[in-house]
Amino acid sequence: MVTISLPGMPADFFEPISDHKTPPTYLYFDGTSWKPGESGKTVPVASPIDGSVVGNLPVVTPKEIDAVMAAATSSQPAWEATPLYKRVSVMHLAADWIRQFEEYLTNVMIREIGKSAGEAKSEIVRTADLIDYFADEAEALRGETIDSDNFPGYEKGKIAIVERVAHGVVLAIAPFNYPVNLSASKIAPALLMGNSVVVKPPTMGGISGLHLVRIFEKAGVPKGVITAVTGTGDVIGDYVVRHDAVSMVAFTGSSDTGLAIAGKAPMKPLLFECGGNNPVVVMPDADMGVTAHEIIKGGFAYSGQRCTGIKYVLTTKAIREQLVEMMLKLMPEMVKAGDPRSPDTKLVGPVISESAARHIEEVIEASVKNGATIVMGGKRTGAMIEPTILTGVLPTMPVIAKETFGPVVSFVDVNSFDEAVTIINNSSYGLQASVFTKDEGTGIVFAGKLHVGTVQINGSPQRGPDHFPFLGVKHSGTGVQGVRYSLEAMSRIRPIVLNKPQ
Ligand code: G3P
Image (cartoon, rainbow, N blue to C red; front, side, top):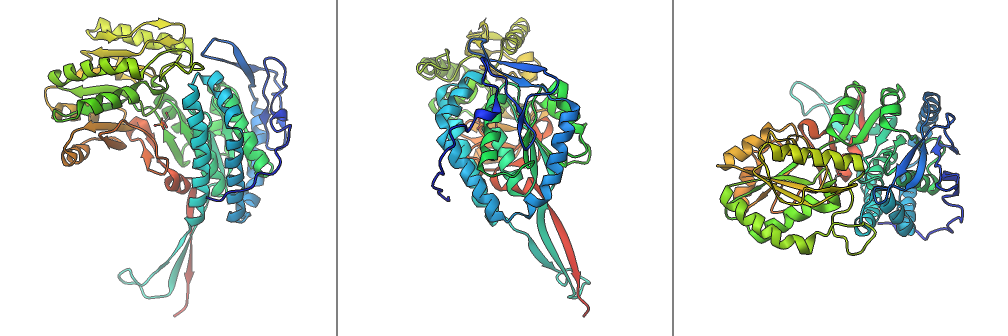
């Protein structure tokens, strides 16, 4: 990792990105200047903590989107022609400035999305490290040459020069739950591979996303090469995704939205991370203490609002009874629902909005009506959902038939582990799955039966470490993230074949 002495941080670093009224109305970035939306329409970012307006985001118009796309298109060739070592140095400076603003960015994120201080700070630190890692890895990612005569029937005389080149304009759509990290995980590889990037931050988390774009701008990304357009997906999403200037779409969000976008960006490379609805399988020989700890951590971190969150546990009735008993003992020390600003709060704060909380409440109630049992939790107060454990859940019940993006872990009793395989493989989701067993060989064989992206053995699902491959199958995504994988996804190869007369 290259360490750079930080140049003097301009005092007005974030000044231009908002009107600085109370609450501020933020500006979109057309690649040269920060501007209020011409329509005057804005969307409020209401804190899930107390409903207070953290700020307002402009809803850009098609005309403003066209101008942004034109800037992204015209600026991209010169950026791709910029020597890689210069692109790399811009990334390292951005990473160092993110570290410089760790506390500031952490506080913005806590208020915007109700993430706990610990989790928000961890996201900021992780993002700086990720950008540095991308920059180091990009320097090693080169093309190749291939000779003709190692294919039957061919003589020497043809050499393929295989370059790795940019797609052009990458559209980066980030989710509310990681507004900084899952923006940077798209922006950094896209820029390093010579693309220009149009960033569509989430509405909730959009303020954090705009701060990140400002950091890239000030770190030296040239005019037009990075831009940011804001507005709710239902208003500007179609126009942005369908835009002819967009060469590639990188998206993290719900499976429903991912499916909708995929249908609107035909013949374009896609890098999607969608809903996970992740299962856990607990074998009879599993270490129940480790398993209970991992299920709690994986099920309740950031109030269950992670694509890799644990959503249901498949095991026999006897093991479930042991496990639930163990979890109930551990919950008081591992989980304390409350205000994410409080140091006493552990893992569970408010979910992203009261309407999201009402939806979670509804699916819990519907599942209980169908026969599920609430072992703990289940109640809603405003945007707060109590940490909830359900038993007697069936795969068809609403709480797990579709991903419930909240602090809810369901137990599904099975009579065999083949039945568990069938349930997992019949699901439309396939991000990750976890298997708990002391016999790692059994775990590896079992993992081979599961139609999911990644199988964790004796650990809860997670995306990190961020250089590991990370992918979803079925409705959980398309393409592979992870440092080298993302760099490859954000580029394409361009073969040039030299035909040399013999
Ligand atoms: O929900 C986003 C997904 O990427 C989760 O990441 O690091 O919490 O497993 P992580």
